[in-house]
Length: 290
Image (cartoon, rainbow, N blue to C red; front, side, top):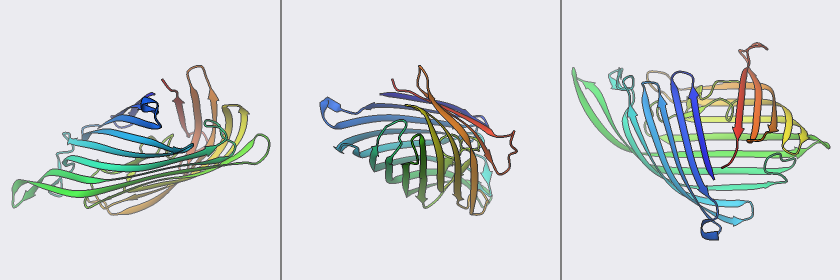
């Protein structure tokens, strides 16, 4: 399976993601996955992530994985500028290893009426940085090496209410632990797949969390209309002279998932507490496999 994602985000930001997956290597319940993610955030920094993972199907619906990944961050013209005598974005390289588990027990993979889906991954490794500082009216370069840990969790539950009526509840959470942070480290949050009612990757933090509730009315085998409420939490560390802060962001709206000749389309009209009824965000996603 080959997957490709291309995003042009607000603020002259672009991302690209490419994954290649073989779920049954040599006809064994052993899969391999290769991935690349690239990010160019205006003139602040560019970031590349390379990952290789092996998955093992323990039982039907349960997969274990092990991965290794490398990240490279290079500051741009804005990133090498000084804030309080310190370069905003460090030149950095990171090497991490990870483990993960995925569990699925639903009656349908695309439009479930009942069941549970759980996914979690943990990564740990080292990051080395090179950063310029102003010391005694001179510019010096400092190098550091420190640990980083990352945790990602996603849970969905589906409960049938009546013949065509389904309740879906869920939680998504991401956590980054590090001795130091800069803007290129933080977890990106907001948009169609993480917090509806807000721009794509509008927020960033060391801890991000979303609770969601959906009421779905099933139309066809792979189609349904729904109402939803999202509640997001973002915790930012003290960074670039900004104090540590935790903020709650609610979102709500309605949507429609339907099948087309090229894949499954999911479209939503979402609002947040600052929007009027006619100023909502339209999120549209298309999923297909090659």
